[in-house]
Length: 143
Length: 143
DNA sequence: TTAATATATATGCATGTGCAAGCATATATA
DNA sequence: TATATATGCTTGCACATGCATATATATTAA
Image (cartoon, rainbow over all chains, first blue to last red; front, top):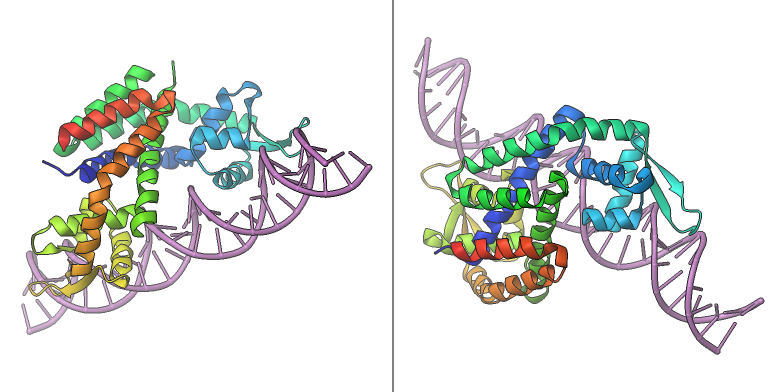
């Protein structure tokens, strides 16, 4: 009988391990952080390849201020540019550049491989097998 | 058809939301961070209420240096003390104090309530329902 | 015994994050 | 029109964390 708090912690650790594994590959192969990649992916899927800060913030599950810095990072690399929102001068659009789309597509091609490898690696630990199996199933039943 | 990377991200967001929710309650009611609580819990379960840095690091899934600072925090609050390891002078034991055990037990009583509330809150978002249901089941089938 | 290597912990530094506050702009009401 | 409040974003700050490295002790090989 494992205490509740530790089960949940293990679950979190599994998720984190998978994410870290993916993040490392993403960083190594494409020089991209995982959050950065997700932002690019979201922008790439958005109509006109642009999103407002709030939308990004909500889609990424990040604080608005964190998104400000995230977009700063992306902009510095030339993956996005900021554009004023004509209808609401308070608003700011983050727009994917050609370069941004390119890197997103390159990284996207590798992503599934990273995920599969990460899941395998984490589930090589006997304790994690059941959790990983559930998460894996959950992942594929939704995608 | 949702892309793989976004499914996984949502899963992570769900886990994070639950954790944040619990962490906030823990902080508000007991002045404890979630990691701090887990460390106390692990110490409380350990034989002689003591663990070495490395053990904590591995159990918490944290970098060893992070554990050094974590233990610093706990020590500053009087929840633990450091003790030298007689057999290996490199080693350091972190030992739960009476005060530490006390706070751990108090917080522990509230923990399950926090978790249940957090799961409910997160699953009030329709998009998260399936994921939460799975995690909930996973949680209880292990504890 | 000495030298080289390995292990356990601590420290310096960089980073991503959240929170609180600030500024500019929008919207509602007097 | 004028004032009050809400909204969207940015900035300053604090903090937990990871990585690289330093230091002390153990272990192993020559």
